[in-house]
Image 1 (cartoon, rainbow, N blue to C red):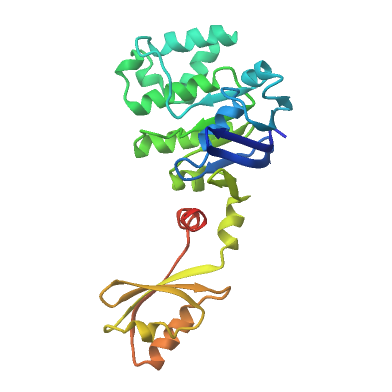
Image 2: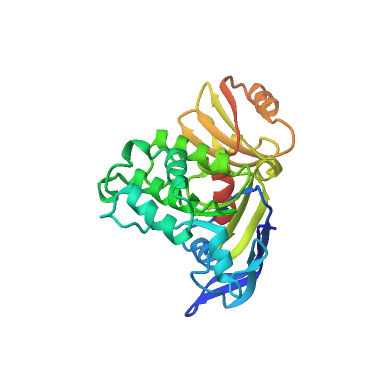
Length: 298
C-alpha cells in the first residue's frame, strides 16, 4: 500500500476534525478526496505529510510510519498545500535550485519539471510577478522535483484558467501512471476527469469510498426533464409511477426524479398520453458526481 490510514482521529479543542477514519490507497491510483469545507480534508493531508500528528490511530506512507519515520515519509512525498508557500522575491529557477539543493537532486531535474508543468514561458521571472495559476505550477513543479512516489495535492487547480486546467490535469494524469496521487479539490469536473476513485468525508467521517464509475453507476436514481404542451398541476404529476421528487423548472417544463433500474422515459410518455398531454421534449439527465456529492453530504 502507498498510503494506509488506520482509525485516525484528530480534535481541535472541542471540535473533532477526524473521527476514526480508515482507508488505504494502492500504488498507481489517483484518488479524489472530497468533502465540504471543514470536513477534515486538509487536517488529514497535514497528518500524512507529517506537519501535524493525530490524536489516535496510525498512518503509513510507503510502509513508513508518519510519526516514527517522519523523515523517510517526507522524502517519499511531494506535497502541494492549499495555500502554496513560495519565496516571491526569488526567480522561478532560483527557487527550484534552492529546493534541489535541499533534496540533493541533480540540477538537470529542474528543467525536467519546468517542462513537465508548462513553466517554460514564465521561468525567467520572479515568482512575485507570476499569475496565481503560474504560482500553482511552481508549487507543483517543486512537489515533483525529487521524483516522489506519492503526490499529495490540496486544491492543485486553484486559480487556473480553462486552458491551464487542461494542461495541469494532463500532468497529474501522466505522473499518476507510476505514482500514487491523493488530491483534494472542490471542482467535481476535475475529479471526474482525473481520478480513478473517490473518498468522500463529511463531519470527520468517511461517507463514501468507491471507484468513480461504480459510485455513479450504483446510484439508481435517474432524472428526466420533460416539457408538456400546456401547464400541468402538481397533483397530476405526482401520480407518475416510481417518482421520488418533481420540480416545475419553467412554465410547462418539469424535472422528474425516479428511483428505478429501468429507463422511465416510456412511463412518462405513457402518462402524458393517458392525461391528454403532448410531450414537446423528453430528455434523460445523467446524475454527475456533483449531484451525488450533494446528496451524500447535505
